[in-house]
Length: 97
Image (cartoon, rainbow, N blue to C red):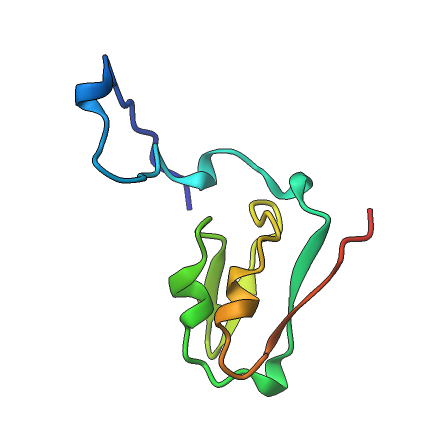
């Protein structure tokens, strides 16, 4: 899947959105090297609710069948997916480089 690129022009404060907004999809830049912890999925605990996918701010979780697949090229290790998981099927582990 190729990320779409958008050109956003902001000429001054009047052009700024009234709330925080992404200036494009995060899948344009590989940002996985930024993290020091990463999410690990425990499939046996996953109930397939897809809340991790819904809340991931970097669009780096895909659902494959019943389980989330994390694209570590783009995951920053923020932990939102682990926090939102109702069954604790995602845990954060130290990144080994």
